[in-house]
Length: 499
Image (tube, one colour):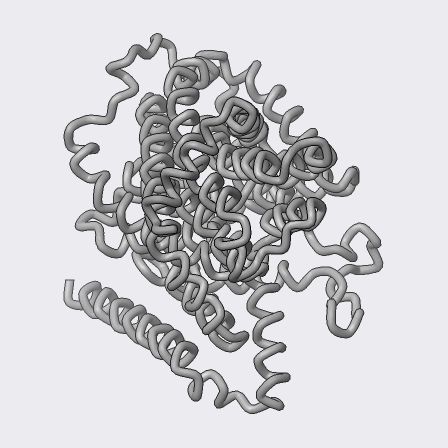
């Protein structure tokens, strides 16, 4: 079966009424779950797993996948309107989406996020259809040393590229790495930085950290202005459309973000988090006016949104072709397939073509449904900002506490998010980037795991990072970025002296 034949077969299968209903159900549930801060696709997919016992494996996978990428759409809403990211990916979107909303252009920010998400998903689908085999082989070529070197490059790139103060960026990354060490060491069982608290044995709650750094910190910052009003005028269709200058700046970030997301999403263990941060950092680097980032640049919305949606599509490559889940959500997908007796692997395309091609076709159908569903809802979401903030803040706090508590069911997490929020507010006053702290927190445990694995395989020889071509390339790029950051810092200091 050729690619076009398989794609046509998949479209016919995905448009069957019994399958299409579950696709619609998945994307609708995913959207509304994503809008609720802190709930996330993980909880929704976990709750829907028992339902998959009573439907076909193809319909089950299509429904769960719809929840997954539908939550990517919904997650940008709370991040842009209220700066309440439930995931690290949506935290990147809030960096420019929320300032744009504060300027009275919330409709433009949401439209940009929705359109970029749709375009990114199309790029991910195209890559999945044409390069699935190549990406699977590339994923198998990556060893533990390669993964560790690649993530170190990601941390260095995010903290140096386009940053006004690389020293502050490195400081936040290191703090995130230290917070990622909290909990029980999976190799030795030693408790690290738990201070005798059983609630910290599993580490710091990621949702609590993201909510505190962005949501609670923003609430504290606005306490001084309790009478601040939101959007007072009603926003029509014209108010949703970006300006001509904005539209001119969108294609490049979408293409670059989609390409980055497609590549990193296919690598097990990286997913959309790293691709979102790298896409944002790349746009700051290539922009002629990097000072606009963080103040409402549309490129800061379109690039990470395209990247995380492309990554959510290409993440199925190692899961279906290799049987290797790249993140916990993909592990749930793999579990749903195993429940039905389906064994993912290199032979899956020949053994279950209707599942593979039906899933690929459902990506396009589901993302089109999401675009049709979300565009009319933009006006409704924006109308939330017309509520006076003295009434909106208590509701935000309620949703925030419910979202944090729903993850682990611990009141300790509610207290933690309050403390993290206060720390995030103080860091913002000192002009430190909370996004870099979050990136260090997410990637720190992954770097540690792959670093230990690489050293065990190499019997403690650190030269493994230079002997493997992929790892050596990443390490050379890291050294180059560090040298570039030091050179730029020296130039700024020399210019300040002569000026």
